[in-house]
Image (cartoon, rainbow, N blue to C red; front, side):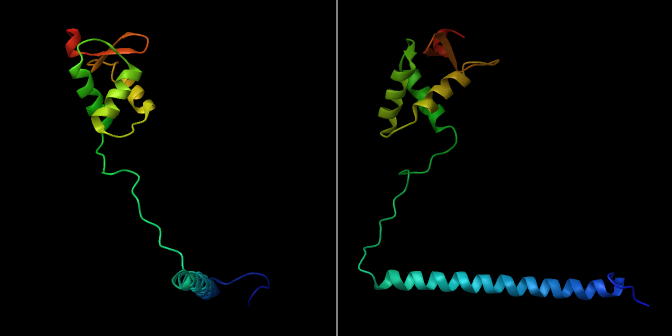
Length: 136
């Protein structure tokens, strides 16, 4: 005999199947709704006189990991004297021919001037020199 308000183990499989079919139907309905809105939008764009916008890249070329570090190292290798962060930043931008975040240059100098084998030596506040040029 079946108790009211409860489910038998035999019924749980049937209920799970109904629930999953309902979820599939709802998902399909949602997908159809979104696709129809997309089709309407595309049709509107085709009939409009608006010119398609040009696709532009945020960067002219892909950058590999460590590109700021490589540029800072190249700039510092050209100078045997300590350089201010602002001068290093300007030289890195001139070397690369584009804009570079000043924070990236500052971070590279600060983070690579510590540890067991630093690449740069901080000689004063905001002034760095290449570690090999310093005699390390």
